[in-house]
Amino acid sequence: MLIPTEPIWIERADQLAELCVGWRQQGAIAVDTEFMRTDTFYPIAGLLQIGDGKGCYLIDPLAIADWQPLRELLLDGKVIKVLHSCSEDLEVFQRWLDLVPSPLFDTQIGAAFANLGFGLGYANLVKTLLGIEIPKDETRSDWLQRPLSQSQLKYAALDVAHMLVVYGKLLQILKTSQRLEWVKSDCADLVEQARAPDHFDDAYQKVGFAWKLRPQELAVLRQLCIWRETQARQRDIPRNRLIKEPSLWDIARKKPRDLQQLQQIADIPQRTLRNDGETLLAITKSQLESEPSTWPERLDPPLAQSEGPLLKALKQFVRDKADAELIPAEVLIRKKEYEAIVRSGMKGGDYRLPERLKGWRYTLIGEGLLQVAQDCKL
Image (cartoon, rainbow, N blue to C red):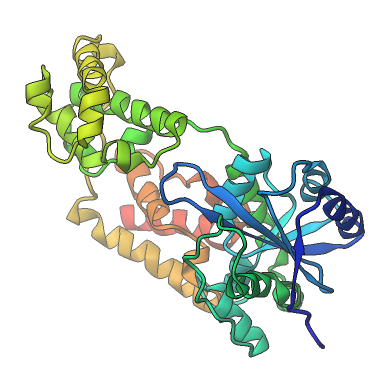
């Protein structure tokens, strides 16, 4: 089968609208994006690639004004949008078009369930399934420059040229192994997660060594993290350009009362000290004076060594199941989910499963994990 790989440049709204009419008659289209995110919080769309099996279309986000036909295509429930490792692409679409493409099929997830490898890159997937080498020499290109170079155009086209063929081969493998519904479920979860509104209230829990802080200090850290998340978005700058997490942790621990003390905190950018120093001090002061009833509870420390045997038994159970199913263990459970199971039974109650292990994973590993945990408790 001859796969067209020549890039077809689209920079007019009428061209795009006509193409979208045809694409909505297809069962699936290949989709990819190129974007820039060097100095901004949000990704800036530099290029949209769509492959339909007949051509590789490179659509210019900087030239077209009317995106309604594309919006309707990306939300058409009858057209599967095929992407690879799509989490960043979904961010691009949310920022650019205020939508999450659906339904979608992530070929990286499909490849994992097809036992081709966990976290497999697109070029390696194409080589594995089709024996075709794809160059990756434009990964860090400037996708906002115009005109794009011939090398960039070729690279972008190849990112979607083979995707539908790869998709077809993955479907065959997944249907034979009866795992297609698992992949569909995980891909639907990606869409749901991407559509979920942002909540910053628990951002402090992800800060390194936050578990070492007392409740009052955690109250300070929580509010500082909310401020950072909100301001990074409003100003459209990277979080760390505003202030890094270790600096927030140090403010919460040392509780500076004035600018002189704040300046002693390591790694706060001078611009942030100048423009936001008083705000950081005010946030700190307000939380130090807040009611103790509003403070967060202390966070759990890392698991104790005594929990090691249970953790080891849970991991061994999943490895055995994964080996029997010929799939990577990583697609079945995440590291933090092992820890959640262990912690759920540490206060004397029954062990509980994280929400993600209550779907199709329950029959495969969830029920067994609970049994292993209970057996280790006896």
